[in-house]
Length: 164
Image (cartoon, rainbow, N blue to C red; front, side, top):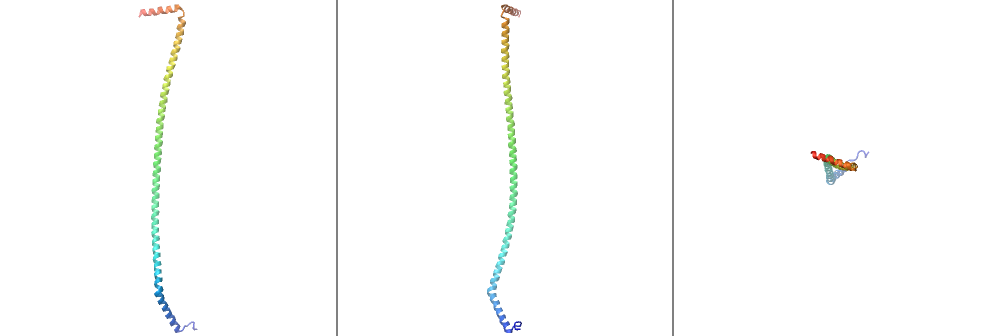
């Protein structure tokens, strides 16, 4: 039964030991423990604030990246549009140049054909006149082989001269 109901002296000494222990713990351990707890609490609050700042910075960077991405897409679209316009302009210029060059070549060919045609006609006329002269010479030669034909022609020509 002694274990269930302790004696007064034991309770007294246990109370004194507890009070001394409480005083020693309060004097030497309570302040450092409380100080470390408050430091830990402060460091946790700073870490939370730092995490919140990092979260805000991350959100700002994400928005900035999205903005830069939008700008890059707009610049890409502008560059592509400018390149398409430049391509269309070059194609149009080349087409116009080719058409002008083709027209010049056609005109040059037409002039060359005209020149060759003129030369051919002149050559044909020369050939025709040469053939006509050869035929006339042969005909006259055949007609005037006889002296009487020659005399008759001279007489006719003299008659024509007297009448004029």
